[in-house]
Amino acid sequence: VGAGPGDPGLITVRGLERIRSCEVLVVDRLVPPELVEEAPEDTLVIHRDDLDQDAVNELLVKLGRDYEVVRLKGGDPFVFGRGGEEALALAEAGIQFEIVPGVSSIAAVPAAALVPVTHRGVSDRVTIASGHAADGSEPDYDALARQGGTLVLFMALQRLDRVARGLIGAGLAPSTPAAVVSRGTLPDQEVVTAPLDAVAEAARELPGPALVVVGADIGQSPRTTR
Image 1: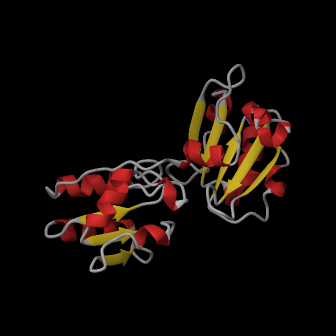
Image 2: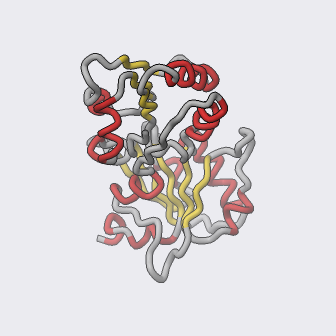
Image 3: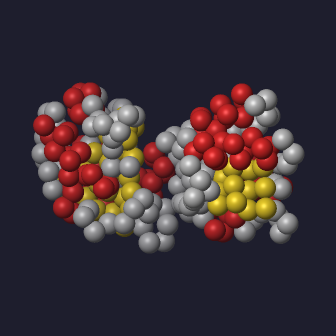
């Protein structure tokens, strides 16, 4: 079950129904406590903080044989959420399961910050990427810079200076508008906007989790035009 981008009110109706009927709830660190409280009083709640991914997979398989288990994950399970790995483990073990999508941070977090990811006549595409490649190395800056439109970057806050320099080196103009949204959709949400060559310094004090948005459409935001 995807818990959504942060605000507990943004979980889906189906997701909330599953939480309210489960026998075991396995939750991530970023899941709002208000959603955990929606589970029945006798539900076994397991926080996965100290478990690596293999241990989580094994736990879901073991519990899934005998109980109705909800695996509650921040955002959407299949967008940088390792939901695919857990689904494969369950499928290989013959455990029946359902994926309940969550409202993804891809568009929800920028929207909550008044930052459009598309705008008519300005941006007609969105590229989603991580702040590092799948193998942990540098992103393919050349490919990202060639895409045009808007870049939405997950897990890039801690290395934003390096990412910004990589994108500029690959051809993006230093003046390209950029925004960083910290703790999006939550009451303590913070947003900074700056040119790409200055955004890392502007966002230096922001806490995670955060989403980075790069593209000309940011200039169409009510935040930057009013």
